[in-house]
Length: 84
Image 1: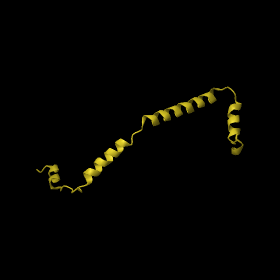
Image 2 (image 1 turned 120 degrees about the vertical axis):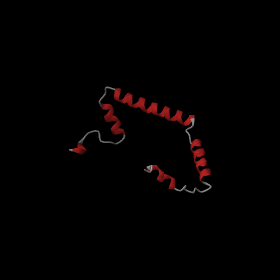
Image 3 (image 1 turned 30 degrees about the vertical axis):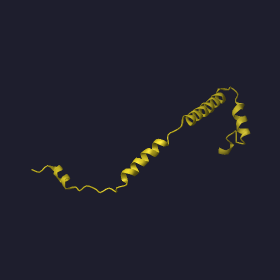
Image 4 (image 1 turned 90 degrees about the horizontal axis):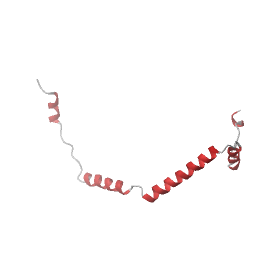
C-alpha cells in the first residue's frame, strides 16, 4: 500500500525572483526604524493622564450644573428635547 504523503514528492519547487530576499530584508529594516521614540511615548502618556484626570474631576464634582455648563460652553444641548 502506498503512503498518502508520497504524492508530495511530485510537487515542484516554486521559482522566486532574485530580488525577493532583499525586499524582505528592506521591509524588516524599515519596520525596525518606525518604532516609537521615547519622547513621543512620554508626550502621549502625559496627555492621556491629563485627559483622564480632567474626566475624573468632572465626574467627581457633586454639582449637577457642571455638565450643563460644559454643554452650554460647547453650544451643545444639555437636555433630551431632541429625542421627544
